[in-house]
Length: 355
Image 1 (cartoon, helix red, strand yellow):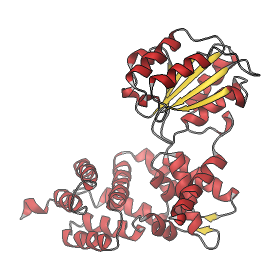
Image 2: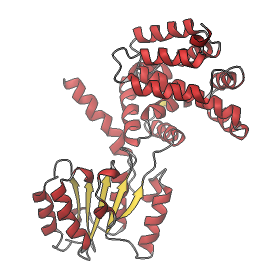
Image 3: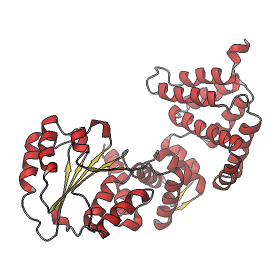
Image 4: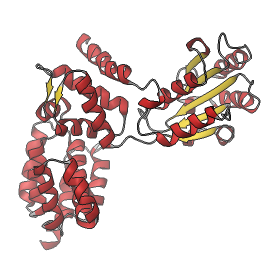
């Protein structure tokens, strides 16, 4: 229990240490940074904003930086978690507090995270304040579920959509942090951590921290990442890809069975396979993308992509990609996690039609 708690605490260390603290450190959200900085320069900023996007995309970090850029000192910034302060009494208390003047700043800034968690009555109470906010108050609402925020609230806010950082951005960040932490890591390992981070800065940093905690010599290899995260090895992905291209359903089933026996995460296996298939399709149908693919990946991976693009024309298709996507969606609730993949492979190779 203590070990688990320590790991959970450690997983937050890198994220807190390297979360952006000024505009120059914000990456992947240039479309938002440019508008916010310009609004401050022109003194044309609004009194209510809503930041929306998936978890770990930097909404709270940008809100804090924006508050700081407005000249707001820490004692005049209030952060509220709507998940645990969702009732009408909480918002009534906020409505009373906004009318008091800032301690030492031109503005008081209220950052309300997970705002979609507010109750209906709480939203109605908040709406009254947003309609006629005091001149010294700025609201920054944040949500991962925009569809749950009432239209009446949205219409009173400037809405900014945060993009998921690309795998390339996350890979670069992993390599940069590893360098700062005096840790040796190769591009392949950094790319895998970025891939597993699934478009979240927070999750990517957490995974890096987790892998780093398991390293004995301040170095990170792909094998270590695979061991810690349960991701399949590159050889498994390549062998499985070869079997599918050859329409060798028996070998592909054997690889799946062996992976399952070794407690490989089937969702991760399928997602890595899907990513490889996508790259093969890009290589086949978008020649201008080939140089980027060859530059960003190691030689062995590029070779398997090429093989899928050329020799796998009958198997590596858009229909196969869709079949794999459906399989990924079904794995999580299948009683036999490997079954959706087995069925997808039959569809992809067409062996059932031949028999």
